[in-house]
Length: 204
Image (cartoon, rainbow, N blue to C red; front, side, top):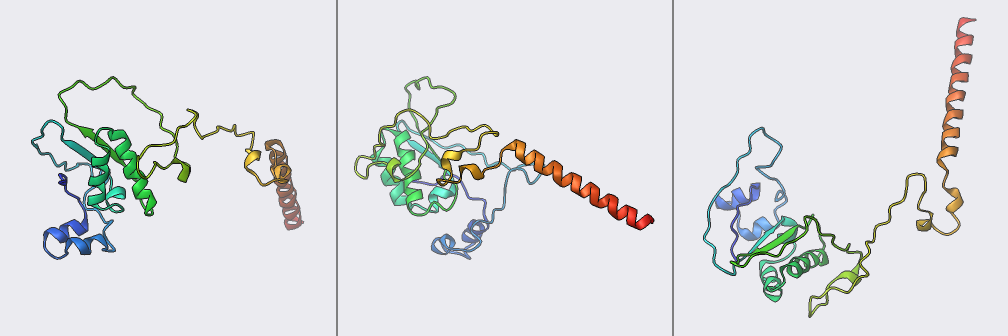
């Protein structure tokens, strides 16, 4: 496995200049300080380069939320285990990073160089939400459990609080929007009366 891109970070500059070793950079307190970013300057310096690729080469595009949590050897092993199913491979990588802490956002995308035409895909593919340990792939097969095809997100209109998520017996404690408006109107009226009294006392 070979890293193709260069990290635009303070610690990488220190590593290149010989002031830090790779091991020291892994635990450096300023490893999150970056030297180049999109949106900070009107002009953006973009690294452009050409590489030679061969049939079957696999490329992994990922964030440091993956590489900071998972060693290169484990990343390579998971890619090899799931070489025929790169979708399963990136899911396994995300699970591996989350298993050891998942301290940062984890993004992973893999593709293979192939002369075969790619299958037609929808522009957007719905992915099941990971809700807990039951959604992690099997340790040996790396297969995910079957799901019923329904998402885990429920949309609740603003006027209807999700009372089913409240502790039992507290449903009635959630004020209705109408009651909130009445209370706010009452507070405003009290403030107006208080202001009128103060004004009357001052001009007497």
